[in-house]
Length: 332
Image (cartoon, rainbow, N blue to C red):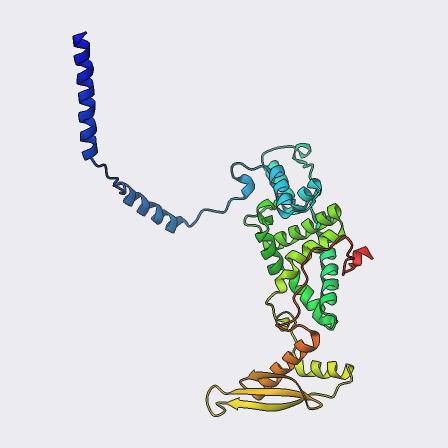
């Protein structure tokens, strides 16, 4: 009994002593690189410089890829009611089918085995491209009713051009889902894939919902864009004279409003255009001719209603009782 008490007492004393010792011990964390890290990093940087960056790899060849789940997630992310079969077909390009068949033939497979039970997106792309042009034309005429037909065509051509469409498609994540023979996906293939997605949306949700999709993602690319950056006008003064003649207004008269540094290397002239003693517009230029052309462009922007301070575009959703403002060609 006595020995047990002494043993317990000794253990308790030892524990108290260890606690006192541990209180005085401080552990510091040391951050450092391993000795082999410097040579390894230098070797990998030298290898990257000699061989160049690795070739891009399609998302479909990377781990954890599920095409069905990715397509369904794409539809949910855009909050659009796509038909999954039509949307899957929109991402399959003819070049991918041809490359896949050639790859299977190279493996020694017969013609029946190499045949793919897949359809390309040619029809959807043509359908989506036609709908896009018709909708954007009607949308431009509705928002800029005084703009000439040449200007409407130039604006639509800009919105449906390859740089604008591919920029929108990449930001929507269409490039990762596109089945193409080349990686990265070429711009023309990505352009046709985006139009095929528009065609699939029209088949799934109708023309009205597809028009709202184009309005939200393509028409917004006009924000901050100048009219004459999209529409090349060689003779703005001649076009202004033609517009004023059609409106039965007096012809414009250019007058020098003010000038600065006329005898220096960098002169500046301001030319104003007057019609019936009313100032239409004024513009700057390094020469009188350049200032006159710029003033004519400013006057044309005012006539067409395409100015920097024009009324903002209406991107609000349609109410249930509200009729669509734009009747597309396909719905007529």
